[in-house]
Image 1 (cartoon, rainbow, N blue to C red):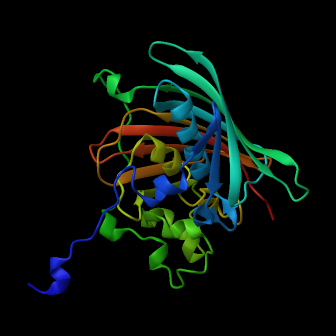
Image 2: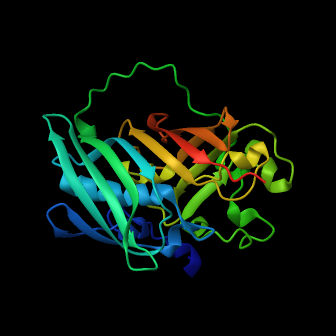
Length: 286
């Protein structure tokens, strides 16, 4: 057997992957955690909001008696930078099936003053304890198989976008939502993609907090360009995802006054709706 064929690709596992290392938190004191925001999860030098939410989500999973995020709402107050940060959590209420807490992430500004970057209110539970009954009218998004979709590495100049996060992700976008990349946006606020982590790590509830905010902004397909910073993001995690790639569908119906909403659905390989989100984002017009 040729040597190349005998070597199998090594896939990262949950708990032992780049995502796990880069979202790690260290408990300094009860409710207080130190972390390091990695430059590897930036878009045009801005730290990705979903990555930040995953870090805060990991701190809350440690601080609360329940380990799985059910509902997480974040307000992004100031732009985060790569580097050290501290997270302060508070347990608001503990119940039999749900516990609720808050978390805030702080960094120091150029004058050495502590500044709050993000504030989160979240409810946690046990996804494995949920009943199996599902009654839904939701349907998985329909788009081409992965080998007929395109990612950042397929661009004529893959490094032109300047987004370090692209190297950490496996994105394969539906060609029907890629008009913006060819200079011909469709005018529809839609973005669809296969999603995974580049090192092969399967999805878990924390990585779903990243998945809802990892695709290019729907504003691109409306004809806008540039940075689209998140103002508020709410994520509902519905069940633990099955192994395999995810499908993410994001839509925008209204851009007005320089703001738009994005509604996201995340489906797993078993055709289950595993996460939903809505965010309000600012569009830098002109």
